[in-house]
Image (cartoon, rainbow, N blue to C red):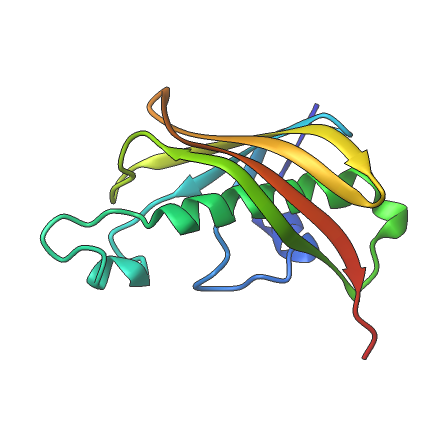
Length: 149
């Protein structure tokens, strides 16, 4: 089991502020699972409009955080397939469920587990938790795409 600091995350993911939704990887097991952390702060740009009375992290961004975690797991598990022009793309989502709001001050723990890889498409289960309570779950699919200049 190993971890990744923000510099390793930035090296692997093409996302940047305000769309980088992983702050650190707390646990990682090759071809198996990854546990990531997102510190949710009041300064997130989406809180201005979602919702001014009671800020709530949009569910679609929780799912995006899960997708970024799957990309990290896939890339770190198969470093030989990753180059400077490789991006892992989100290709599908099934069974998304939202069970509790995620608000400023929360620490979102995102766990993704690799279920299978078929014809280049990775299938993962994702769970996002706050204080041990499930905030969201989804089945995420992603694939690698090499974009030449």
